[in-house]
Amino acid sequence: MIIREARPTDAPQIAPLMNLIYDEMALTDLEDVPGPDLLKVITAAYRTRTYLSGAATTVVAEVNGQVVGVAFGYPGEREDIVDDVMTRLAAKSDAFDEPFDLESETAAGEWYLDSLAVSPDHQGQGIGRQLLRALPVYARRDQQAVIGLNVDLENPGAMRLYERMGYEVTGTQMIGDHEYYHMQLEIGDPVRVTN
Picture 1 (tube, rainbow, N blue to C red):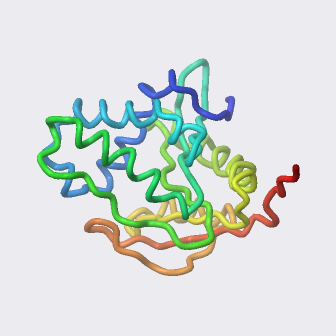
Picture 2: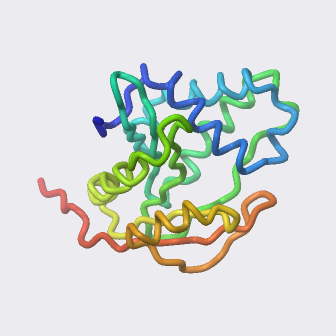
């Protein structure tokens, strides 16, 4: 397995994995959007510089040339920049009847793990754990000392994984119609960039 930063050519393989999360979240804004149209918007987002290595970072797990896992995150103060990508792309699609506005999910002062998904065919093989182990490098590069995430109260398996990786619950939050635990992991000093 290779853990690496995503490339624009990975977008068609990333989109179905990210769609797993959207399905799980059951966002009312997306219930009337046909699946193929949503996949087109997600694919377009993961071809942008903003999502790949600009305001955000996308990291993939690759097995035999196929993307089987993805982690997507960014410093919390960049949330509006990142969310604007999906909002703009959805506005260009005829499939969206209403503007697609994402709710704020992150806490101040953290590198926010927005999404972590593993292909159903590859779950239980440690891929999520390997992606989580790689994230401190990117968080420190973005000068963050804490990684935060939200996990659905109804997803005890993911909760156990995050706890085993050292994340601790710092509160709860409603996102859409689901309640989530907000969890954080302190990773130590960020990388200092000197000229």
